[in-house]
Length: 119
Image (cartoon, rainbow, N blue to C red; front, side):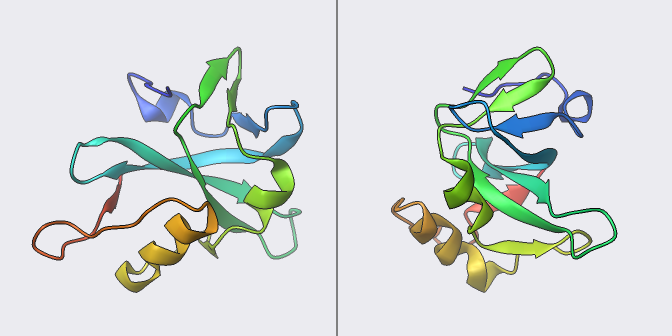
């Protein structure tokens, strides 16, 4: 599991799939509000000078290596994931679609609160 002591040390590192194909660069981590554990990462994709965006990828089963974060999802699935602009925040209403894209069950918090919080 991806458990960095300080996420700032990992920002900008490559995010790769299980085959080692580069997906993009790590931007931020969203934690599960129920457990305060890392749940999803946002990855910067797109060419500089064109429409860059942040896609969401689950961190379950992710591992770290020298200078990279390896996720267990294939590059093509991640690149088609729900995304936000590089200066945007995930709207609460869009959380279920992030989970659904990866076929992960989504349940809001007991009081209807958000499941994901950016760290």
